Image (cartoon, rainbow, N blue to C red; front, side):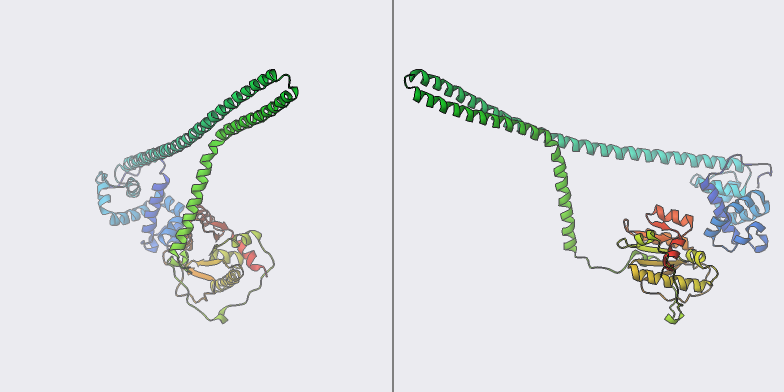
Length: 441
């Protein structure tokens, strides 16, 4: 039973539920006869479901809200694809194990009796699930920070133990030096006493007495010099104790050098052979058929040379990924698609030969009627997206296939593509920059 016309949803659907509603409508739209498709949605009827959901999200949402006939046709498709959930919602029962996102989206499309309450309850479950997930993430973060704190405390404890040991060693050395100083002072006092006794006993022999006194004074000076040296050594020991805190840094550096040497040793033991295979070669895509070199036209180039792209291409092991039609429709949109492809691939072959960079050119193959005849120049990998996939998705898969840390440059003026590959660690540049670089003679 459908809901009365007067029943309206008073809250806004969150983005995740709204996106699911649009996906349901997009899947149903592709199965409707052309006469049953609302006029605003007819330009998108032949799109692939994923591309249609992306390009026609706003008009499909508006049609579901305002066009009861269209919504009813979409509801029929939903009942065919999800009969159990549809029957439960019409009966006023929400399955306990059902995804609340799916329940809210299906109830919004079917609109059974009391559908607004079902949607609100499902959205509340979505919100509660998000809160639980956030709480779990917070607990995990607290646990991680607690573990890091314990590790830091253990490191600090070990460093403090090392410092205390160094201080204890310095204290022992200081005690030994002080004992030596006291011994020297006692020796000095005995020497002075002996000198006075000699002066008294040998007063008549003043010459001998003066000589003995001079010798005693020399010995005294020597002893004082040794005493000063001992005091200087004691001061040095104290400074060494204060600088003991750098011992932890020295041990950390020694550990780092040891790990580096171990890695080099593993490389020598494994003796892995060099490979010419690259991660992009493992990504599934449609490749073009070959043609003779005579099918390739000659190209002229201008003299503009963007320095930024040259700097990127000078990076070691750089991989240049090109959004083919995005570049050709920016630079020479009036040419037929076949000539656009030939012109761009020829320019990329010359660029790859000059820079040594790995170059992959991606074209959208969803709308192709048959095999594409195109030469695969040396140094350029040409790929077409498979049926049901757009070039943007193939580019993202190519970037994701690369190991972390390898420089990847993606040429596309599509903002969504640029933002997506930037989050994956690639460097996006606009199509005009590559066109200017290829135009340089």
